[in-house]
Image 1 (cartoon, rainbow, N blue to C red):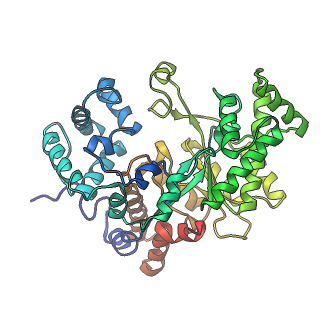
Image 2 (image 1 turned 90 degrees about the vertical axis):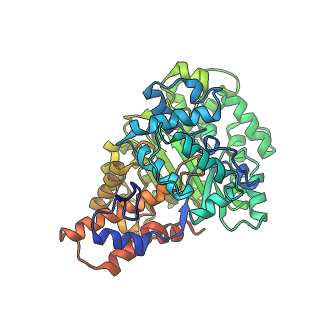
Image 3 (image 1 turned 45 degrees about the horizontal axis):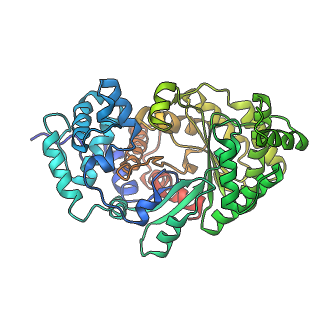
Length: 466
């Protein structure tokens, strides 16, 4: 009998890779320090009536693939039945070969449901029934799903206006997985975004202040940082096209904000000055509180205006941008460092052309004060696949110390996405195992195994101090 597609040594091509994975990586707990899981569902320990609810709804990776195959939107985000949506996804899966979705799909079916059949139109009905039976068995709530993958920490992403009530409820419960948050203040920075003034009003309400001036805005943001910090937050995250670092004066920024609050148009040049000022203020404040700051750079969002009007953001219409990154990022980090206000920092790029830029940039600001203080983040979004992860690991290895890397995260909205950690770990172990076999690395399993365990778990545990 031939072995199943997902087997014990999947992606592990020799005995060294196998030993590294099974001995040093496989059993390490998961620290998922950046994701978009809904904390309310963890707080309420939500259960799912069928696999579409937990696996397809909200997953724009799957949606893009289905649209490419010609599946009608009714069976993607529309009013088609949950079963019909699943059947259309099953029909799509064989066509996703060589896309990471093919590997992820079968890893997830195997790890959560013990299903080793390949998903297709032929197996769809059977797998629907199998997953339905298990999901309704009482063993597949949100908390149980996190326990199944040995999650130790999961860190969701919240806007400054969030009450954090669900995190508070989780903290008071007996749930053994630590659920933290990261502070995502992009809406307070992007002054020309739709609805900016309405957002500032909401921010003021959450901070219990009237925001009539630029100073009021900064005060409100600080109050929300203090609130998040009091609720256990130790990270922030920014999703920006590029780092903003234009020259500005305090009087200019005050006038720009006043202009916006008066309902007047702010020019692109003015917006960049304002965004630069707020970003610097926030990052100096993060340093004061000892947080880790994350920058996700390079997405070109909402490209399809028609579908954005119909479905809204985060529905699968984004791509890789080709923004210049190096000079502004360097000047920004240097400005913070020159005042000794550069906190621990992780920088993620979406354009693979920027891999070496990021891998060398971090070395400029690793000053010996903290191990791996400035990190080149893991392959993100379109790059969290085998080739993207390998290129990120190679760039970091060639130009920095991969041994200090804090490893993988899911960046996902799905409770079934955690095998992405396993995927990354297998790729890492195979990369090192291949180099041992070729004689490019010594056959020193104790040391290389320690490096694998560190990248899989221990570096993140030390870095984030969860």
